Image (cartoon, rainbow, N blue to C red; front, side):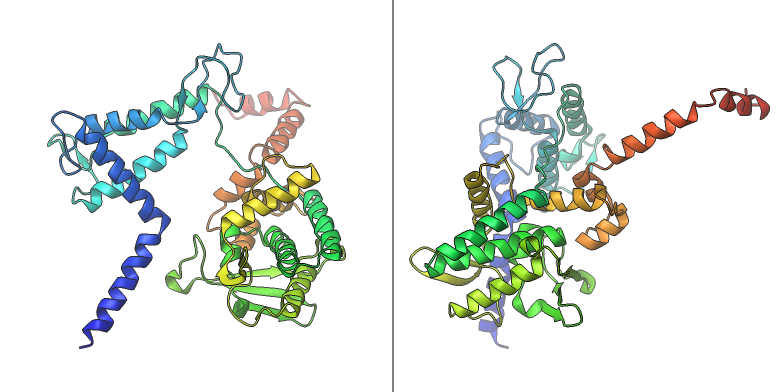
Amino acid sequence: MDWALIQQRESDIDSTVAKRKTTQRRHSLSLELENFLELLPPSPTIASVGPVDLRKFLIHKDTMGRTQVHDVQCQFLGQVGLKSCNCPVRLASSYVSNIISLLKDIFERNGRGRTWDVKLWDGNPACAPIITDYLKVMKEEQAKAHILPKQAKPLFVSKLRAISDFISQRLICTFDPCDTYILARDRALFLAQFFVGGRASDMSNILIQEITVLHKDNSVAIRSTFGKTLRGGDGDYHVLMLKPLPDVRICPVSALRSYVMLATALGIQMEKGPLFREVHPGVGVSSIPIQYSSIRNNLRGYLIHLGIFEGETPHSIRSGHTVTVSLGPSQLGPESVAAHVGWRSTAAVRHYSRSRVLKDAVVLASSVANSIKDDGLAESLFNRMGAK
């Protein structure tokens, strides 16, 4: 037995698990709950706390929110942002739902199961009816206050074209190798993300070895096996396809080709490893994938410089893609969009594209208007069929 090898592997696995965002959030919430419980008489622990005290913790957390819940008589009802009124500021109900899910996981990992027994007053307190009712009340309050789930503002082709034009001009003027690399990388990344509809974090995970150029029409195929929702289960993978466009200014294939050529000319090894890489000031291009913070800051910087920033984030590119293919001339159905982007259901498509609110509302309104052109037909059929 090579015990040293086994121990090293165990250490690597534990380190990977500890670095996961869910693990870190669960650990942070667990410490926060423990600190809160110490202040409650008679100082219950995670192993003994009940639903009543757990609800107190949730109410305590609720005071740290940034969502203002306006009264129906308030002049700011339905408006976004903090206003100069006395309406309470709370956590968004969706965030509270996530906290409760994490608490269920925390208690389960501490041996308290996944259910709550009301008669025995035992089990997982986060599953108790009092916690479920608390979340329902929060959702109802925020629905009455016209608070909608926060969504990324879509970033459409017009702004991508403006960014691409700006980068093209900068590439002509700059002589700094790092600036040249960053500009070419950002243009290729933004355009590729838009046309595949991927997450920015997933785009940073793309490896050069996963890319295949189809010589028939110069399309680019990317065989992705790892991402936020793609974790290698059952051999799952997703193929991202990029097609050449006549408009070179926003052509993702042209931008990728230009990026690889420039990076290679700068002496950067582009045969393996991450496609999009981080740049460290004073050091240069690294071998690690670009970080989300860099993508966000650079996108924001371009938009601010151009005077067209409206609060967009990298997620706005994904949202803009979904709205474009759902409501644009092609009007792809939710199933087609989900298959293209890599979602397992159409719920995410409807969420991002707002199709249920926009397109479906128009269709239904037209159907209602057409149905009363002969206002006596429905009544006549109803009576003829003998319905009472």
